[in-house]
Image (cartoon, rainbow, N blue to C red; front, side, top):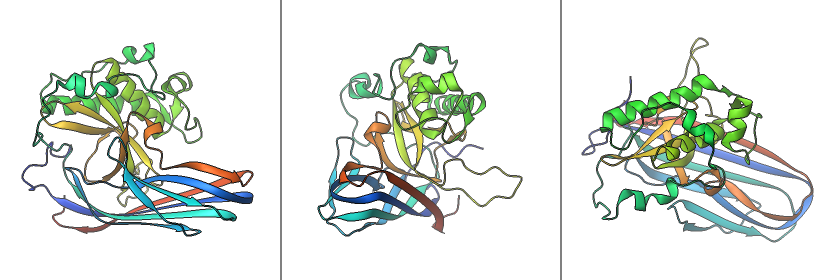
Length: 301
């Protein structure tokens, strides 16, 4: 059963999710003068509220926060001394809502939506124009009623689950949907990029969302949520009456209370959890561990 469509008047059930995202970079040889940028902090939206958040880095450094063009929280820090590894631990407590859209905007933008969301209708570096997009049959259309739009969006997400294999290592962070279509396998990033391409080619504004997903306890005969042990990616599509609706083409789900949003952008290049420059260091080994736990319930969904 799909969750309720909109969060109205604050009456939808709320859940508390605790996120711990640990990243460790180990260097082959000592490095120095590193400059790093992080996108690991959730933001307040109409469907979630950040109660606490913090980031710890080792070796210690001064974190300087700002908002980027898309409204994402970014932390920058520099480490000028010699160091052999880098560890980052980001923790957040977020209240999420059992709904998939915020509802009508409080202050509608007077510009036509095709103008407002032009960058989410055009190709982007990791979602280039491909003929294959138009071969995917779907019924997502901006003139559809909200409920029909959400149903069609979920159906399209399901098409990706049925059509491609989820296989870590089949692609890399620089892959485009062409590799998914040709190889038949990928990860959440690839599924999201391809679904965004399909929607944009049909005139539906679509953007890339990154964050975390909670995987409820399940038995051996119940499939778990794919992508729960790392940063996860999904799609947000624009419906004029209720705004952005999220869909997860890796798990055949509309994005509900189980998801914590961190960043949005045109594609993965706009939302990378960590990027930077390091002098020295040699080869690097990356370790990432994400844990999302249910910390409490205000009104259980």
